[in-house]
Image (cartoon, rainbow, N blue to C red; front, side, top):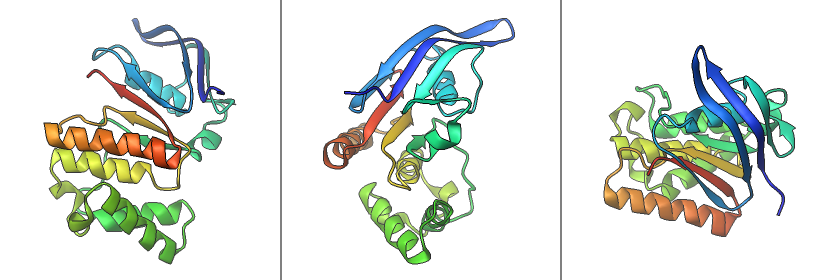
Length: 194
């Protein structure tokens, strides 16, 4: 199996603080747990993989592309669920996802269809007209997963996907993650301290 993610001696420093000190990582197309305590550099690693941060030294590749120099090519193939995403609070769930789908190249009709499917998949179909800011913390995590799935990504990076979720919601979301891999063949990296 070919590695989707490869890092070689990846380092990142912020002033005098080293967030990463030589990370060597290989992630395939399965479901991979990227586990460590808070402050271990997991989110920094995710931001480097997506091209949001430039490493101090070392290398990071996804799909064979350099994460800093070719991040646009990577982001076209990856769905991302950040730990603390910033969504406009007053826009209804469905409207936001539909706009995101249209920005990814879907026609209006296709965007309508995919948005309904994704809201149903994550269990928010009855919340489609609720403003994002009125969702509970657990519902916002489900919404973030739906958003990450727009564009039919080959690979998902999920940063603390079950944060602030109750036990039942956490189990359900983990089952959805497993289903995405088994039924759709999506590779997944779950970054978590749990």
